[in-house]
Image (cartoon, rainbow, N blue to C red; front, side):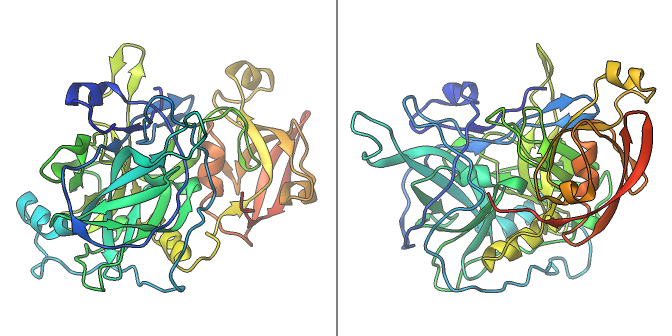
Length: 432
């Protein structure tokens, strides 16, 4: 399936909005936050999916820029004015005192006040450079999870913004500042100034989910006027590994050598409808707690065959430690090996007597990296991590990202015709 990201453009009809599902990315700056009356909502952002051999590959809900806009770039972190380092306890709060599941209507009533529309404003490239006024380039969703105005959303919702505008359900708008972004997990934390009295939505525990559990998605689908759209469905699958769409062909150490963006592990698959503009919005369990961040939707299963009812959300348990690190301006813990790699083709597997869709071949080893220090070489084939088979393009990152910096893992590799075990001590991934 072809991955793509989508954001609706301002002043465009619904029909055009549905057509403009273009891929795009970018970074963010900060502003003061002062509430003003909100007028007509701006445009929107949302998601889609594709598959690589052995892995589910997906599109992230991205942003389409107006014609003539500068190509956005990815940033490992955004620069902005930030408040003093703070610590927010990201724990779930009981919603239903009886422990019984809430109706969709009740979940919406409780969560809706904390769901916000995020407008990504970008300066346009003109005759004299990027000196023109910032105009809405797309809209996504976020949710307030701390009364101090901290909002969680997707990185691709805020990428490339010159300014950021947040609209709440009670018809107020705020200028927002970026606290931090983490493209590797497509997450961002932004903040508005609500004088410490903003509605919040509780965070749940995604590890308690089971396939078949009811879920509710709330977001600014297609940037329709009148507030967020509510859809419902079930948890279709758990623990999915999906790949975001890439915007370049160059690979970086610790990543696949083929095209494509970052791999997101431990995602939640749902059939709750997710549309352009839903990106960054909450996926809620039956108690009204956030258990995922809506991020991607499936596009085409194959040319001419549209996928239906397949959306993906970043699990809240994956997002919590990232949000904590961003709020406190600390590095996000991420293990680093220092290689670029690619999956073996079926022909290559057959030539070395491996099952199809097995192994990852190293294309480059970064000097001084853990891989280099462990003696890994170009053309080594990684067969296992700690005894678990590496299968498909997503196999290596899926197994690797279950570890943390400082862990020592054992890679089973094939060098020539000889199989051997190589211990590798992981370090913190360098900032980009």
